[in-house]
Image (cartoon, rainbow, N blue to C red):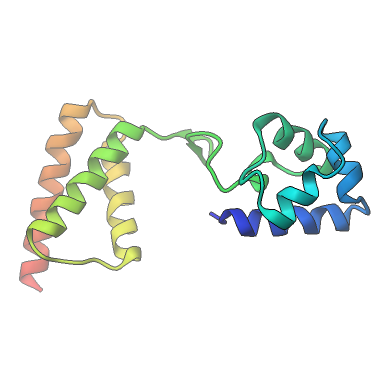
Length: 146
């Protein structure tokens, strides 16, 4: 996901590409004439307010998510993410790596999280925790074998 600077740059480009100017867009989102200039040039506010972001998305004809660096929902590909289980998996992996003074590349860690999540996402938290512990044991054994 892009950072705040990248988001501001993208918004500036979208405004120019649409043939609009910062002053007109500022007024269209219900703010003073300098609002968008201050946002894009000075980074103030750091992020657009929810109402302004929604209005700007309509003006620019883009998905609202493109106008922020923060996730706007807990959905990925139309599926709701169980944040409790995802947090459990991340915590277990981090603890496992720290306890074994081990590291994984970001890609390997992401693959491991994805694999575990796909296997336990529909379980209760207790069952998910048991399965995650089992996965970690198995993964540990596989790493030792290699």
